[in-house]
Image 1 (cartoon, rainbow, N blue to C red):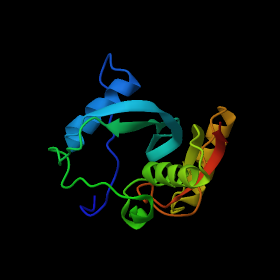
Image 2 (image 1 turned 30 degrees about the horizontal axis):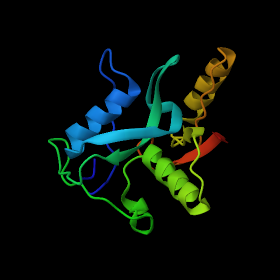
Image 3 (image 1 turned 60 degrees about the vertical axis):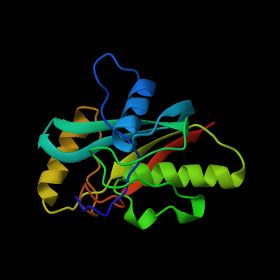
Length: 173
């Protein structure tokens, strides 16, 4: 990964850990920041991500994003981070964000703050894939549609491109 890309603290849950506990732990590990979770902000599903392993097996990710506040105004890079910073809404470096989930989260948050009403959001992010193997993609699409699972292999960028996605099924309350 390009070392100039930015992201929010995130990671996998450990066995026996709740989503809130995982968010607090990851923030402490990656930013040496102690936070108090205020509320859930979004659930983002990425139904297909990464490379297709077999005709019937592919990776799925689901993100639960929380709003939180710093318990103390202290933070610094953890062992997995090169730098930590806070940004105002107008300073968010959208062009240097590493992941589509972070781009979507920060855009939704910015829109909510500017509208004066924070909402809970649910949506799924459909990654766009380069169509280098059109026949294979068509075959995989057919197999997955027949098995009642949908795979959208669209022309576009690589799965790791943070801007190569469409946002579907957006619900908010």
